Length: 418
Image (tube, rainbow, N blue to C red; front, side):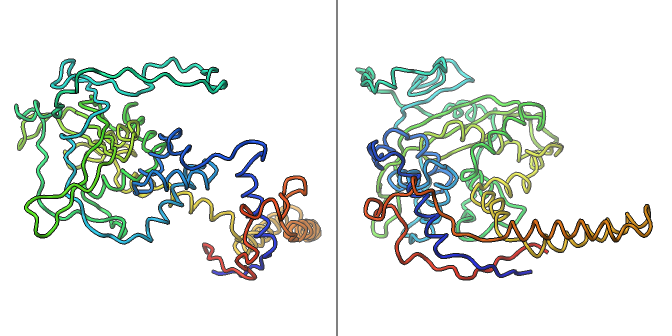
């Protein structure tokens, strides 16, 4: 059912100006620029890129600034921009084994080919506030190794060579593209991994944590976690091999899980996989845990927990969809509420009539009158504007205020649930 609502153009313009003023903050402080966000809030930038499915650090930093640091809003902005871009080519699969590693660790083997590379991490910090940062002191440059890193082959290759872990075989099929067509459940593993890669980190972290607390029969080992730069290559007609068009920073995680085997398969280890743009180690670990948990039916394991149910997990992983649906509750639902209000009054009237006889109508009439008066007072509209002390003047805030030709919204239609 639809309900038409009158809105105020001036109220909308004032709301936009007020938001821009709040984003700018104290004019006595220098304005933060996009380059500072990109370079000094890099982990936030990486998360926005991963969940928006668009690798562009500059635009992700711009989205963060525009959203005043709201990560979900920044993801929404960058995801919306992504829909305007043409698709020029498809890259060949990334060769993560050839990654130019900056961090690479394994919790399953102490000595691995290429060695353990700690890299930049918060893992061994004491989680104490560093008040020296308030003084804006210069950070000393890290020590640099005199010898370049050795080649770092993937740790699980040794298990693969012995047949101790399931083999990943490329069947050559073109993967489903969730950015062009909405997925239709059930979906294959390639589609699941796409949806997990752009899923909300906090949501995946909670589900991954649940698998460790007994809700999923999942006891993993971190086979390998690596971060670094990989080449992006495309096939070009007329050339013998793929051409490199640039490098991107990615994070990759492979979890190892036990599998007891079956009549058809001998006991072996199974895998959970995670990959994301940027330095998103926690995201890829959670993704690998959930990926393995979602393979329960495929591996003949009982499906007993939320993290093992693909439709439940995947249908609620996208924070843009989740935020949009929750936020729509702020929009007008007047007709729906009035229908429930009338139903409640009638039920109360019938209840009172059964208990008190003829006095019920009088009590209910008075109650309805009071509620009507309250609703009329609550729906009285007034232009939304900031206190004069918080709004910048026209001359000083022209760049941050809403345009004088702000979008007119004399009427808007909102679909509400029946």
